[in-house]
Length: 625
Ligand SMILES: [Ca+2]
Ligand SMILES: [Ca+2]
Ligand SMILES: [Ca+2]
Image 1 (tube, helix red, strand yellow):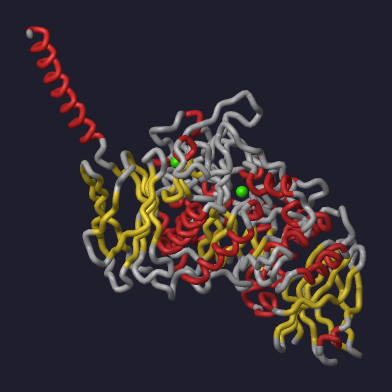
Image 2 (cartoon, helix red, strand yellow):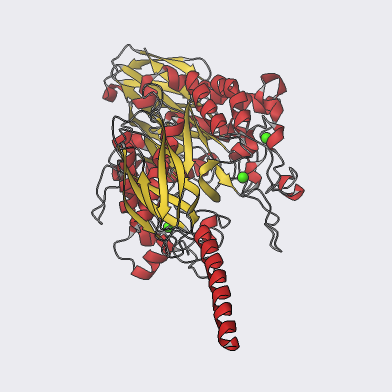
């Protein structure tokens, strides 16, 4: 009996323990929510329902319920670990902006969050898109201007990460710095700023025994949060302030988006929302061998094709799997969210060719469906026009896909211009390259880069001279397409490959009195060509007609309606006289050509021809009057 009693009492004790454990685990099993993405949305949006990705704990078996009839939740699914929940939230189109409660509940408890519906921004002043009327200026935020020193050493960074003497450290540039320099940019005449990614990146430093260590993610291409602004650059309020203030002075903003990959410090790497969220894992993945032609050629084998699409750009850039519909929805919403909350006008999409073309199409369509004028340019870093042309929208590739992509960078023409103006190729190579515009459905839509943060600066190329740099800049600003400059080229900065090409913009050069002679000469030249473009519609959107080319010289016209502008490049060390067939453009005898930029001169049209006197080593612009 005693034994039995003992047993009974120990049974009772154990049950009591069971109760406590059960009670405890009941408490522990209540769902918690730590992050909701997107954190806000809009009523009346073209994406409805919005698909939420919720990070939390104990989400297995959790249902989501709206406490307001204006929101309706469906299609809830939870990952195996119970750490991520997906839910579709249909928003009544007439629902006013505000906060709406959503209840996450399971058998043992519930957690409430309030979901934010934003008021849409004014479509008259935002989402303007980019056209040939624009001149784009690339800013690497960390390296441009430091407007707020209080954000230069975040608590979760070691001093090594903030070492301005390390070309791979954070240098302190931020959004306030860009706001402060809007008058400089307005004076230069650029009309759109492309800022390198402003997603939040890891604040600390990588240490390794390789030559590139210690390094940091100052450049922004290693996102740890697709929905947060880099704390070293500012915050969402500061970003909105930049967009508003830029818009107020007629400058548009382009966001650098990176849908192809995130940084290896992203919480998803240890705990992905789905097992196929990435292509592989940190421990087991392919590295991209960059056999880029496999993406273009109809004859590539599947192994090369998949490696180039799915391989990680580097070991610390986990590759997103856009063929998983949840990933595609997440990324499309993310792109639209940034546009909607900030009012930006365009997107530069990083490493776009490493994502499926059907995804590029779906992303482009979703952007245009919501914002008719919104513009996206894709980085297809290839010097072969056949390759870049394959990725621009407006035509259907052999794979049956029209990417609907608004623009691609013209790396082929950039390459040709660098070779010509550093004396490595005959000047007629420009004409040779431009004939491949035949591959584009509309060559005026191409973005003509002068340089970017991944390329050696002009002045550090072998054979570079200031006059060569000036001709290159004039060519970029006068040829067809949308010109894109890189901060610092306008003051002839030097810099070899990354990270040398990302030196800090010299603060003194923001003011004319702080520029040395060379800097001022290049600045004044760049400014003059931008102004010429602004003043002459033919230079922005006119037809390009070639008039003359040989080993040292290239002359073309830009013509729109009754306006004809002639642009001539002469690489020779001496003055050169040539005849150009203006009658073929409908320019009548008796019309006078007058210099717009360059040494003042006049030339008359006689018998359908004009004799031009081209100054040595320079670019000159004429207007027909
Ligand atoms: Ca700063
Ligand atoms: Ca950060
Ligand atoms: Ca990829």
